[in-house]
Image (cartoon, rainbow, N blue to C red; front, side):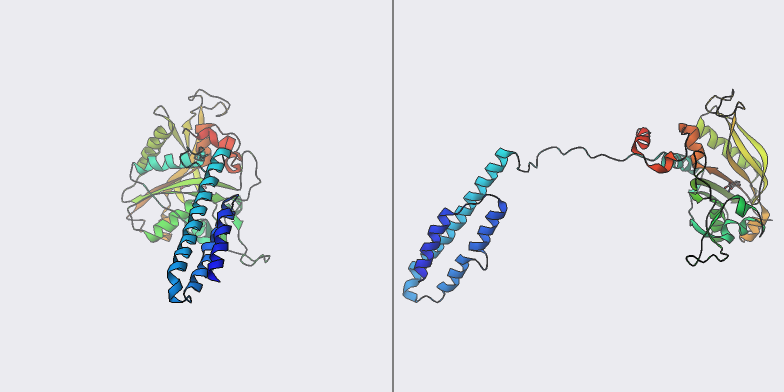
Length: 346
Ligand code: DAH
C-alpha cells in the first residue's frame, strides 16, 4: 500500500544522519534522485484511484518537504562541524605567496643588447638552429675543405640513425648563418640583429660549453663604411659598459669579412689599469667584426658594386661574464635557483 510506504519512509527520513559530504549526497540520491525511493512513490501515485489522490498527494508532498528539510539541516550541521575543526574552506583567506621565477642572466643581457641596437634602427631576425652547410659555411665564403668546419667543432647530424654517411645537416656553430638567411630573403637596406643559440663539439668545462649564445649584427646599404661600423660599436660599448668605456680594433681574419677585426673594450673591472681579469693588459676582447666580404654579398644575390655592409658577432656569455663576473660557464645551464635568484632585482 502506498500509504504504508509513505509512512515508513517518513519515519526513516526523520532519523537520517550524515558524517560527511559524501554521505549526505548518498542520502539525497537514495531518496530524491530520479531513481530515488520518493520519486518511485510519486510514480506509483499516478496509478492511485481518483478518490484517494487528494489525501495521498498531500502525504507525498509532506514526505518530500520533510526529506528536503532534513537534508538541509544535515548540510548546515556539517558546515558548522567543519568550521569548528578548521577544515572548512575559507575563500576569504589571503593565499600563500606564489614563488615566482627570476629572469635568467643571459636573457637579461641579450635583451639589453637588443635594446641598445634597436635604438639605432636594428630589428630582430632569427634563423634555424638545425642548419645546412651552405648557410653556415658555404655562402659565408668558407672554401669546401676549409678547416673551420673542424676548427668550429661542428656537430653534424646523421640523417639515418646509426648510419654515418657524409651529411650537410648540422647544428649551427655561429649565428652568422642568419646573415645568409636574411640576405637571401630581404632586399637592402638591411639592418638586423640576430640573437640565438649555437653549438660546438667541445668538452664541457668552466670555460667552454657545447652550446652557448651569440648575437650577430648585419648592416647592408649603399656606402656603408668601416667608420660606420666603428661608430656603432663604440656607441654599443658605452651604452653597455658605461660612458668611460674605450674600444680598440685589432686586425683579424674571418672568411666572411674583409677587412676583419676583433674588438677589445677597456677592462670594465679595473677601468683599464690592469687586473687579473684582463691579464694586466687593461683590455678585454668582446667581439669579431668586419666589412661583409663581396663574395658573401654576391652568394646571397646582392650586387657588391652597389652595396656594402658591416657585420659583427659577440658571445652573450662573454658579455654577461664581464657585467656580472660569472666565472664558470656551467652555471648558466644548470638552473640552480640559488644562482638564478641573484639576478632577481636586475
Ligand atoms: N661568427 C664568428 C664566430 O662565431 C663571430 C663573428 C666574427 C661574426 C666576425 C661576424 C663577424 O659577423 O663579422 O666566432
